[in-house]
Every structure is written in structure tokens, then in C-alpha cells.
Image (tube, rainbow, N blue to C red; front, side, top):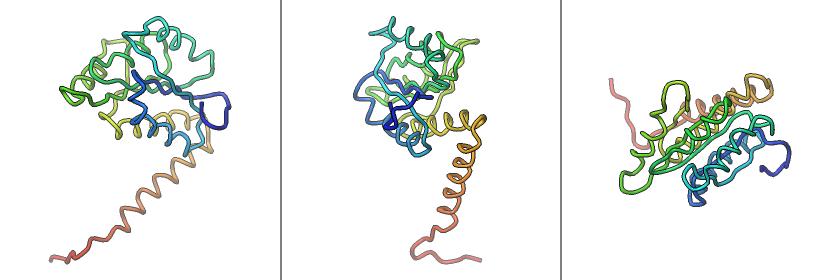
Length: 171
């Protein structure tokens, strides 16, 4: 759970401990916005009962969004989505030999009726999934919506104030 030790709103799941290196970036985004979360390792293949239990009790425990990340045969997000109607955000992770293509396809190709919102492979996907979770939560939380608007403004300002070394104007 996040440092504040309050009821988590977002669950961050990953298929193995080594995935935390990437998914920590999602946690950092949630912390930046003051969103309480919990993070843990579950496996669709090695802990199927516990995975189903986590998903089926998530809403009653107060979670509103679940971010699930896995590599290779990345079925964690789909296994979670099969047991909850909460939004499930899938983050495919890169792993040999296909460098994430297999996990991308495993995450995105869900059967009709069991949706998983799928993000980019790796760190970019982790960050965007956390931002998307914040956007979902902000629909009912004006303070969070304001923080997201400020975040976007800072992004725009960074771009608009970027100067290129040795660049000359043409035309």
C-alpha cells in the first residue's frame, strides 16, 4: 500500500517480483497524484485461485481500478477482468524472446465481453496506465481532476520552453 496507509483505490498487480522495476513507475505516478494503491505479485498461471479471489473481492475492498502487468504469455489482466467489472488496465512487459510482442498480443486480444484497456509495452505503458487510472478516479474527485489539468499544463510548458542548441530558423 502507498505510504499514507489509507484504503487503496488502485491495485497494481504484476506476474513476478522482477516486474516491479517497471511497475514502480506506475506507483510513483499514483503517489505524485496522492492516490492510495496496493501492489503485489500474482500469477494467472501459478496462483490462479488467489488471482481470482483478489479480483472477485477487489470492489468490496474499495478498489476502483486495477492495473495488471505481465510478460510473455501475459494473461494476468485478462484473468483479473474475468472476475470483476472494475476497469482493468493491462500493461504488457518486454521479455525474451519476442521483446513484448507476445505479451502485447496476449493482453490486447481479449474475447468480446471481457475488456482490458491495454497500454504500451513497458515503462511508458506503466506510466500511462497510472495516468489513466487517475483520469478514471478524477471523474468523481474534483481535486484530482485539477491536479491532472496542472500536470498537463506542466507538460505543455516543458515543450513550449524547449530550445534546441545550434538550431537556426529557416524561411
